[in-house]
Length: 498
Image: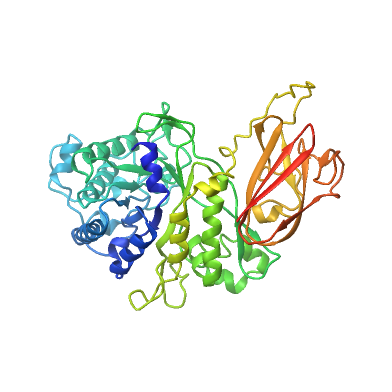
């Protein structure tokens, strides 16, 4: 898929986990049309099956047809995960077309669960499939072609670096993906399927096996405010390579989401201290259960924050809004599924974020991209001299001060990589970030990452030590800030966007 088209979809993406099984599908479709969503991630798939496969795929097809009747442009994504279960695998008879695709003679048999697994002493999960095994490749292919037949045009391949532990050159997973692409070129709705996985890069021989990379957010707890407050942290980047479209990309597109892996840790909430709980995943839960347990105002603000944070911190990144996501033990009362829908008779379990999502999706990323940092972790500025004086410019320049915990760094850390500024040319350094809370903060600029030569806004010359910093006044929650510093003149420019 051409990058412009791919980004059109990713900029209108949501995590719609198991929407194919939703009991409020009519209202879900209303929300999809209202918000302008075009890419529904995790729309179908199984972790542990709740029904026979024939029934599962029938429901997947029915939901896809209903969604595409409302908007035929939408891409639905199916999942193939890093966990399998004996009763699910061994209940399925292998279709003749699967044997044929792998060039094998037909056998009248079911899938063999044990033939899919890593050796018991490998260190892998006991129920993790080994993609180097032919049986596992057939299982993945079987699931993929059935989802394609049901109208699904994208695949999330789970924690791909786990089940490829014995596939170090990625030839086995590469074979399966290529086989599914080939099948999709004939049988998919628009003769194309795309792939992502939890990965920063899956490149072999310069070519990416994935169309884009996807990961959950990384967090840092804030302890000086009441409640369970978290801020997001820059971590890693999306790798580059030749895309499946055949175009070299310095960085492939990247999709962030609120992930789930078990809900709330009830024991932790009853037995851990406030500080221990803060560092226990997302305050003792997974991402979506933490989010769902905040009050409505806080959820709306965190959606706004996540969207702006993504636009500013990763110019190749996009945010998958949580349209529908399982909560495990982390629901609100008896609610076991988070839904973006406004709470109503049509969706009594809605969490009421659809208006915020609609505003952000329709407003788009461009306003905030104008403040975006360069490609993540590509700081540049090495061995650069001032053309007038010949003075070597510092390779490392860091913003530090009381604002740092709100962007995920220790307070007054003059050597932080989180708040390291990017060299943008012309002797200038810049950093953009999102301040989630209004208030008065301070900051200084540490050249070379030390406290021996610092600069602040009201001083035209360097100083040493942690005192004498500039004030940073934030008038509204979720304010985007860009600070630009010119080394030779010590000029500092502060810009803010709400």
